[in-house]
Amino acid sequence: MLWNLPFIAVVVITMIGLVTILLKKNLIKVMLGINILQSAANLFLISLGYREGGIAPIFTLAPSTHMVLPTPQALCLTSIVIGLATSALMLSFAVIIHKKYGTVDLDKIRRLQG
Amino acid sequence: MIPDFIWTNAPALLVAIPLLGAFLCPIIGKISPRARNVWVGGIMLVTAIVALILAYRVFTDGTVLYTFGAAVPGLSIPLDSGGIPIRIIFTVDAMSAFMDIICAIVGFSAILYSLASESRNSGLEMYYTLFLLMVAGVFGMVSTGDFFNFFVFLEILSMASAGIIAYRVDGGVAVEAAIKYFVLSSVGAIFVLFAIGIYYGQYDALNMAMIAYRMQGSSLDMIALVMLVAALAMKCGAVPMHFWTPDAYSMAPSSATAFLVVASQASLYGLFRVLFTFYNLTLNAVTVGWIIIILGILSMVVGVTMAIPQKDVKRLMAYHAVSQTGYMLLGIGVGLAVLGNQPLMESFGYMAMNGGVFHILNHALYKGLLFLTAGAIFYRIGTRNLNKMGGLGHNMKWTMVFFIIGALAIAGIPPLNGFASKLMIYESVFIFNPILAIIAMVVSILTLASFVKVFHSIFMGPKLPEYAEVKEAPLPMLLGMGILASLAVIFGLFPDIVVTTLVSPAVHALTDQAAYIASVLGGA
Image (cartoon, rainbow over all chains, first blue to last red; front, side, top):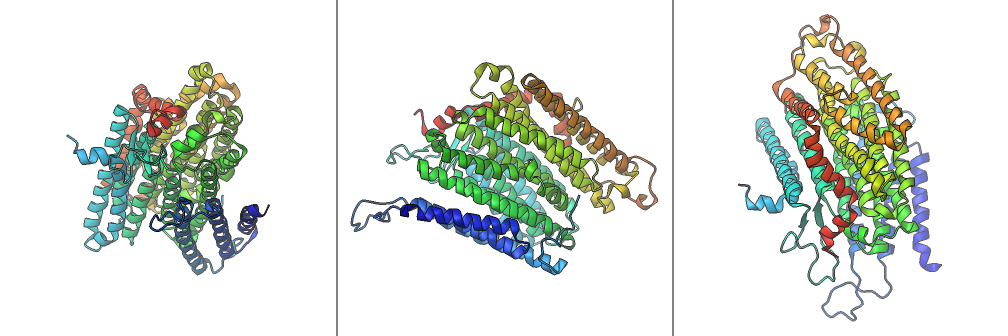
């Protein structure tokens, strides 16, 4: 049971993220929801890659040969970088919307219809 | 004839050239606008040529592998790895090459067109940077053989697309459209990442062929399938998640819209790749096939009914794009529903899939063309509102001709390309289930009705006084439209040649999972 704790956390964080995206009316909060969802994905990758007692595959003076391929960590780093770019782009959109519309309330950002 | 360097490294160059071009574009733009135009046009031309060379190589020699960092590009499995492909591999099979051709043709026409159509705007360095990033993203998505790499290119593509949708801020409206698109595609991309995690946890592999080889169809795989289908169907604009399409397509600059069509088709490619290459027979083919068929039918009907009352010409075309995506999903869904049943597959399954895949190519051509004509009209008269247009046929003759070609092709009138693929879909789907074929035909008729109305209100009628001075669109724009229009006519006149040389190999590459696996993992 305890071993599943990270995965339970992933599910909980995913739900929090999705609920934030779907229910919040504030543009900034929706963007934060996406960031939360992204953290859930990263946590998922990292907990998949964890092996107890495994060490990084650096062969010099390695205490044992019980080594772990660091692919999930590499994936996670890439995903963090992508997440940074995503947040930056979305926040810059929010800045423009606030400048032009004077609000970040999603109910009022509705000029495109039909 | 072709330098050896290009011949061997074509898959890598396909992504490297547009990336290099994109990031050097702002620097070259400092020299002069003319230098920038030459640079962008040249980069796109070279990329298109490399794509065509690669496609030629794939269609003559079979699947091309490119292993990054290996001593020999074809060496997909390192000698000491114990049979596991650990490097990033580009696997370009016939289906990928088919998408490469589409991207090359539409990308080149759209860039040529944008050299004139965007010339009045400022900040063009950034525009072309984003455009070339989109090109790199599409080429990467359709060529890659590594699933995490697919995710990275998906993100590059959606970021560049969001930037280009918001490029013409337009009092904030374009940014609003971009936010809609970007929130959806970021959430979609995160679910793709979850699916990647599920595959990696089960199969210790990111390589698509390796995942396909070890695929067991467990319940975790089904969760991953649901995530991927939802995310990718959302990104290609299928109906329950289509609401970003009209906003994004109508607000982006027209040349970019033509390419956004290709960008959504790259997601469609991803969807097909997942269904056929990853799962293939481990799926409950009938159920999943019907889900895809229902998505397709919904997209067709909802898209066309939403299109009819539109006043904004690009918005109307965008709804038609949703509706046409439905035809591709219908064709492929019918093929998937009978997958594994060889007699049915021979009698109509392959034909339905041929129709669906051929329709991807045709749709990119005529829908790109229609968006470009709408852009040409906007360029000259400055409005997209159908009620304010009229009598433009007197002054914009070539644009009118191109519009007629596009409109007849989308409605499926012979001898244009839309007819060829739609006929294949009707015939095969009729054998599968007559009601579906009837719905498809009715949608086609509604499409025709809608475009007759559009054609009439834009081009017909007496000259309006406010548009008396309107001139024909500039030459580069006409050239861009002309390339797409002439290909639409040629593909409509000789559909047999296209189907046997391009479409049929692509469909077989898609359905033949074993061949895909063998091309990467060897004869195992």
